[in-house]
Amino acid sequence: MATIKDIANKLGIAVSTVSKGLNGASDISDEMRQLVLDTAVEMGYASKKLRAKGTRKVCIFIENMDYENIDQFGYDIIVGFKLSAARRHWDVTVVPANLNMQTKEKYDSYMLKNGYSGAFLLGFTLHDDWVTQVQKTTVPTVLLDNYIDRNTHVGYVGTDSNEGIDLAVDHLYGLGHTKIAFLNGSKNSMVSEQRYQAFIQSMTNHGLSPDDKLIEYGYYVPDCAKDHVPTFLKHGATAIMCASDLIASGVIAEVNKLGLRVPEDISVIGFDDLPLAAHLLPPLTTIRQDRIDLGKSAFLLLDGLIHNVTISKLLLRAKFVQRSSTAPYKK
Image 1: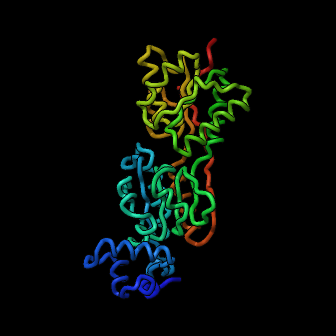
Image 2 (image 1 turned 180 degrees about the vertical axis):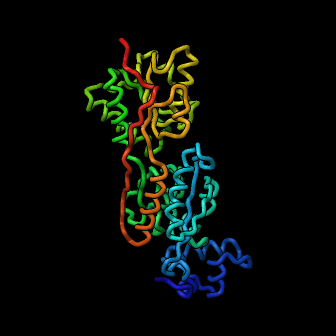
Image 3 (image 1 turned 45 degrees about the horizontal axis):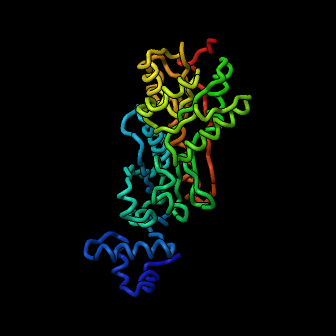
């Protein structure tokens, strides 16, 4: 393992300058500090504090996901992670991330500079700078709903979309629905692609033909429903499967706006089981992701990666939750 002296020799600078760069001292230039950090990462340097047995300072980076109150998707995930971390006396920092932050500083350099042993990334897309950099990182890293091939330092945690979507389609099929629409989340998202493939496979397994006119990508927000619900109804949909509860809430509102009723005129089903699902009118039939358990699983996976247990994927089981937004198809 590289030492401070090794870094100094490689760069041809004083050991004291390397030490200042690694510890964020203000009396060297930003350029020199970044050069020291980048070289330290390249040479596999780890500080004495990080090497100390039992010392764990980790970070949750969160982007494109609400998490500050109990009704928001990320809240319980962070709670679950922190609950598990507290039992092991880990120090957990939650850092809101954005594209500017990722452009300004490399992922590995940020982790080394701040003394983090590992990280859990929430809400990132496959096109984010840091997710691209994570493909080659040596920092133990857990991704939610994103997967990196061939890096033993990175793992993926999520809920089984195949099982979840199949439970939903099976429920609707059992109620006599054959013209089932699917309103997905955003493109360029691994979980959206997983749910699309799961929907196609489940429809096929039930002897139903997926109709391209009844399948659309939107965004994981209610407002996207207005762009697609009228088209679904025009092409004869009797049920709409949504990739999230937020999308489903928008679908119900749009159906009402068009003078129709849920579930009498059209059935609606969601995915996630956010707290709002039980309080919609009508209460939403959905697929539950246990977000507390997602957070706990992310902790277990990160702990394993830190201890050189090369876990690739950790998937939770989905659970079907029946409420009042679905009903038998009326011919």
